[in-house]
Figure: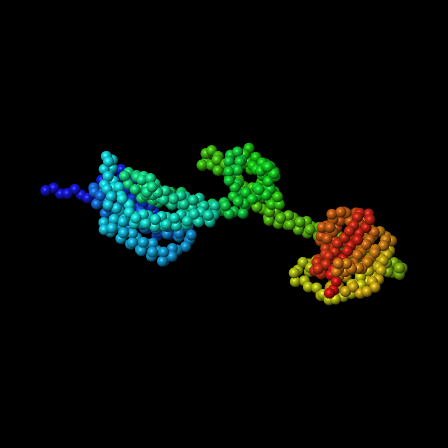
Length: 587
């Protein structure tokens, strides 16, 4: 008596079985490859997905080799452990990889142990209740490869509904990852999202359209295709290659604009910083790549295959140093375009301008101080020399004149030194003033009396109507007197001999106001910055008639700022100047 034919004959000559073998080998190789990458988030779930995939594929191969409906049914029942766990592990992997969080323990217990146990119980006991596979299940041999046409019962569709819920959870996870991803990694999550959709689409075509693949349910192969897609993502350096992601992060998150241009200079892509820059500086209907400094630079780059010698450009209020790198497939290969980076050097440019200004100020300071020191020292030295060598032959009037000149120029030197000390002190944050309530009338009277002694040879007259009532302010009286003294000194300096300086005291808008008006040469328009700048004089020529350190008004403005007040002027060339000192009235 001959032995009965085997229930399952694993026939490798069948194309479907061959495809199963190849797919299993690829999935196993992929699992070993991923296993070597310890930094992969959710790696253990991915490896378990591979194991479940292998289980399912092996079951598919055995089912295709079945010789009877009973054998095929037994293999199909055992395959459900892999069918249920594969989408479960895949959803868990996506959860940990895309969301960066651990799967809750209670979810793991329910989805990995409870649900598979219930589904396997329903599948294995179908011979009793026929609610999973119905009695109409049959073995089909229609001249092609034999296959089993299953009669799906209500428990089968309940199981499929559960699996669809798991897959929909995976879709939601990847969809959320796509929405929240940065541009550098969004393309990866889009591909992952598409890979997760593949099994759903294929399974629906099987259930609704009765689509078979080599005589079998194509869903298992579609899951394998999804795993292959992930393998391709790995090979494409978009998954575990942190370097590739970091390079894209630098492109999208860099604060410096970066442009990708084709060989003709047309923009292919721009990072967000470049897009914002081009948008805010573009003329209506035109592009920055067509107009202005950037357009000229791009045109030179396209025409000469290199940047011009001077690559610093200004766009709006920002300055950029331009760098261009050719894009090609290798040395000597055709140029595919250019990567143009605009390095923001605005801060460096401003610092350089400040350094140049500081250097010029230092030079001006040395020149001014040297001149202001030399002039009175020459007078003092000459006067004292004449007194020392010829005092016996001089009259009393001549001696008094020389002493007066020496004394006057000594006072000028003292004022210059004090101004230099004040300039240094006021720039120090720890500098303090002594504030107290004081009568502004007394300060004005004292300062005006002191000014009358300045340059007596010019015979300048001062008019000051006395105030009827005290005008109280909270101030440092000495420093406020210094401010008024500087203004009066300038009025005397720039007034013609025999001229008049008018001083007035009043109030307005809760402030005390001191005005000093002269009928001198006046100040040219738009000179305020220079008037209040340190070591600055409107007439810097060697033929000027009025000398000074250029510190008085600079010091005065700083003192008024510390009082919460102000100093300003109104002037016209050839007419005269009115300075107004304002500070809050005492409460």
